[in-house]
Length: 124
Image (cartoon, rainbow, N blue to C red):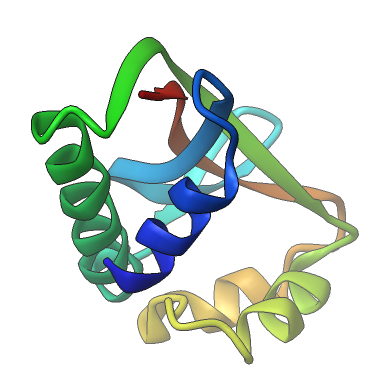
């Protein structure tokens, strides 16, 4: 909440703040629009939920006013399964162990699709 407070204080009164959040359901790996597997989003949702609660508290206290909300899909594209596995080696979320062999065998492009929420807030 400290960082959020600093951010809000740095914005001029009546200025806008954009808040981008990952939201449930869990992200999925797709090939040609077909779901290959689901990624456990809990490690990221724990942090995202805390950040959302902090923003919501600022809204409740009247420091921020929520003006608009847009829920949408975000897709991150990978060259192939090996590229996907390498990218996830350093992330909090992990690909399912029992799917690694199948993912490694993906020779063509694949994508991770996850739900996100963009909120436009105004500093009061």
